[in-house]
Amino acid sequence: MNREPTMPEEDVLSAYLDGECTDAERAWVEDELVSSEDLRGVLAEVAAARDAVRALPLRDAPPEFWARLLASDADLEVEVEADTEAGAGPVPVAAATAPVDLGERRERRGRGRWFAAAAGAAAAAMIAVVVLVPQPQTATPPVGALAAAHSVRSSLQDDAVSTLAPLAVAAGFRR
Amino acid sequence: MRRVARIVLAAVLAAVVGMLVLPGARADDAESVLDRARNATVREDFSGLVQIEWLANGEWHTARVPVTGTGGTVQVGEGVRKAEGRGNERWIAGVSGWQAGWDEAVAGSVPSPSKHWDLALAKGDEIAGRPTLVVTATDPRTKQARLKVYCDRDTGVMLRREVLDAKGRVVRAVGFVEVKKLGGTQAAAPADPPTKKGKDSAPNRVADLPDGFDAPATVADRYVLAGRYLRPDGIVQLYYTDGLFGVSVFEQRGDLNASGLPRGSNGVAVGDATGRGYEVAGGTVLVWDHADMTRTVVSDATISDLRAFATAFDDGTDHHAGIVEHITDFVLAPFRWS
Image 1 (cartoon, rainbow over the protein chains, first blue to last red):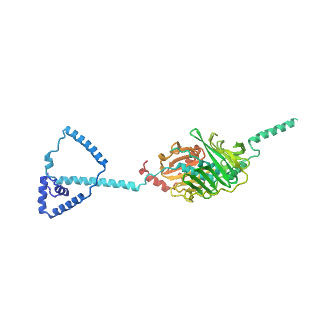
Image 2: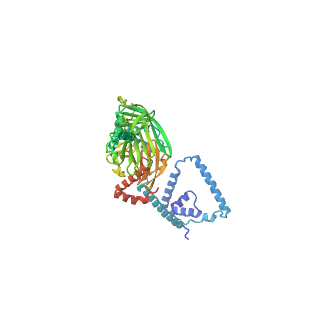
């Protein structure tokens, strides 16, 4: 398996700017920056994007957010302890410091893009169904008002007293 | 002597029979009594107390309403619950003041009551101390009396209307229980209440219904369409009559949302649908949905009669539905869910 990066990616550069690269990645990026003007341009763009995001104002989360977060964190700790007791153990240091395999990463990203595209198409199809297909419409008749309307109409072609009298009493519908 | 005895016996028999059925009374006479009663409250001044009685879930309910008629204006109720009829206008008062219930003349033919009913005229019981004539309407198919109308013998004013079920039992009645004044010199109509609001709340007569709504000219071969109206809330009102019973059909687009209905209803099968039926002071109410349309019918007829009407109405609208609607329903059916 080729462990030497053949082409730096944006996320490698982002990790480099954040100081999160492995030694091998950092050495490779710095070598490339010396010789490649394109890579220096990409690095400048990534740095500008990162600074723009960090310049966004911070807002305080509502108190219930922290309560929910702490609750979920407690659940997570319980799960981690259970894994440790089951022998899962810590992640090996060697794996964290191994040279990045950009080919494998690109392959994973490719599969992710296909999955994202499929999910997007499915979402678009759902939206189309919701927008284009008529939704079931419901109706709740105002039965009290309709009973009164019938009394009114009946009174015009029938005896007015017997037809209008129900309008003067509680209709008898229960809420 | 024997001849004289026979004559006396015949005279006694004639008198007895005459107490039950008016001599020479015909269906035409019964119909003229009904016609006279329809407009009597416009011709005659009156005042008194009317009682509404209705049977709901085996239990009788009653409500009393003071009524007056002055100069052709009929007023019922008092306080914040009252209504008024003045010519072709109808006004309903509530806590927010007067609202227009109707503001235009009605047109449309009303079938003769004798077309679908066997009518009989007889001397009736006294109602609120007034002598009456009673018109009994019998279903010619079942030979069962289904309606009795008691009219004041002197003025023609209708004093009581009783609706009977298929077994001939009274299930609903509206009638005077007290008559303070009836007849005499007619007074001037009362002044128009100054607090009446605009007429925006009254329905409008329409020549054509909105797309998707249908109004068969006749229902169940007896109820004739007498008017089509569009209410301010967008609900279509159709008014049918067979000459004795008026039935209003209210139509709204969409399936019935039964969770929003008042409590106290009973399930009533209408074709394949299960509707909700109510017996209230204002009449019998049946709500159901059919072919993406929610329908409410109101009448003082029994729930069984309304059920038959509703089923026939659905059949009538299905018959009128166009091929395009059927194709549309077929194509879109898989995308519908409930």
